[in-house]
Length: 161
Image (cartoon, rainbow, N blue to C red; front, side):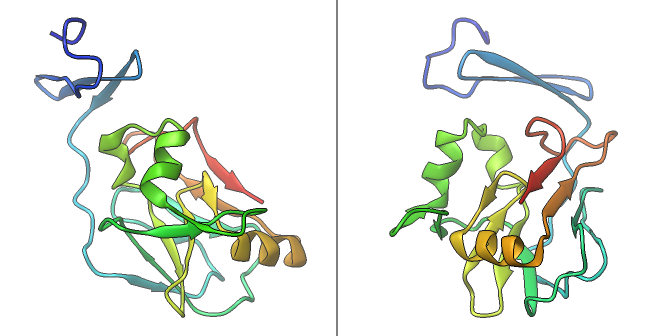
């Protein structure tokens, strides 16, 4: 079923607590059901690690001094200005370019500035604004994923400097 599915399809096989999915020629296996994600934004000052509903956490290497933050999840239509770029890009396209499977994209925690600007997605995408602030502070943002959870794994721990 996974092998013969259309190349642009998103085949899924469920067996007991195991899910097997194919994306870009790779099989992805996860055990258990993903945790329910909150629909409301979570306020965060960035001074201490922020535990998330799926067992993962966001944290800065040094206490954040750049102002109020919020954390939420994708709703669609988000745009981000990447370092070294002059224009904003659809987050969906950025995540596609990085090879993030569709079923994982909505599970990435989004870091939002007080003015509503998208600063980061998980540990793999950072905005121009956040990149500059992190460099100025000598800081880095990390997204630590729990090992026993069915949350997405993007090459292990996310680390953005």
